[in-house]
Length: 250
Ligand SMILES: NC(=O)c1ccc[n+]([C@@H]2O[C@H](COP(=O)([O-])OP(=O)(O)OC[C@H]3O[C@@H](n4cnc5c(N)ncnc54)[C@H](O)[C@@H]3O)[C@@H](O)[C@H]2O)c1
Image (cartoon, rainbow, N blue to C red; front, side, top):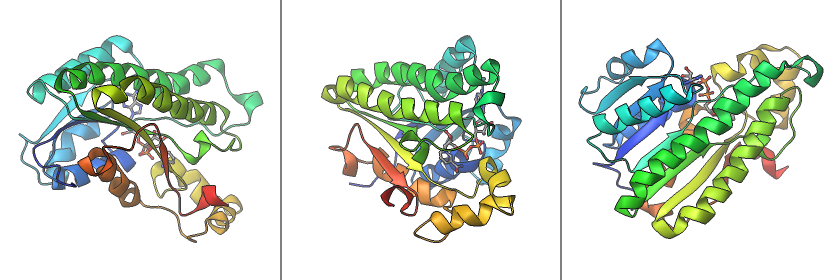
């Protein structure tokens, strides 16, 4: 039910943070992985995991550029031998600024990576998954898929869209054996939140709002991703699973 050995996955944004943690967990589960990321750090992933290079393939690409995105997907698919069972869309961007100060260029960049690239990569992967009659697409939403947030207008708009995109694609593709779900991490200990964590006022305020009374770790997210990639979740689709220490339940 939970065995992923021999499966093939494409994971975007896997060079660091939550994406890297999922790469590590899936690698330990026997999954062959192609990581797509813009960062040079992808070339060090195999070393960091002491992995056999045949099981982890690095594909450097810019998912904000549609030609680069398509080329990266094709390269990833080719490196995986022409099939893909799991797509995890983890690459994402945030900018914390009051709405008055957000440039339209930044707005388009955040929507472009967090929504448009997820849509296009999902279509490309689902085209392959449909042929084999099965597949798992896991999108990274956020607690801001549901909450409005504060000083992160483009980000919360994009993550709200990720939730709707997840539901729309699930509605269309469930009949092909493709499950599309999203994970909603809360306040996680990653570089995305370094500013917040180090803020002497907002940092402790955040922690006080978390019923679990601790920030989340990348490993907390990886466990739910493994579930959503496994046969154990074959009848789970079109949903958002919070990994937030209870924040959305408040
Ligand atoms: N960290 C959190 O607290 C948190 C909370 C909720 C949701 N999320 C979501 O989880 C996902 C992962 O978050 P994270 O904390 O690991 O982020 P991160 O910033 O640590 O990592 C993002 C990765 O995406 C890559 N990337 C950025 N722009 C790219 C581009 N144009 N093309 C290809 N790759 C690109 C980066 O190089 C990096 O490796 C994101 O979608 C984020 O919105 C994170």
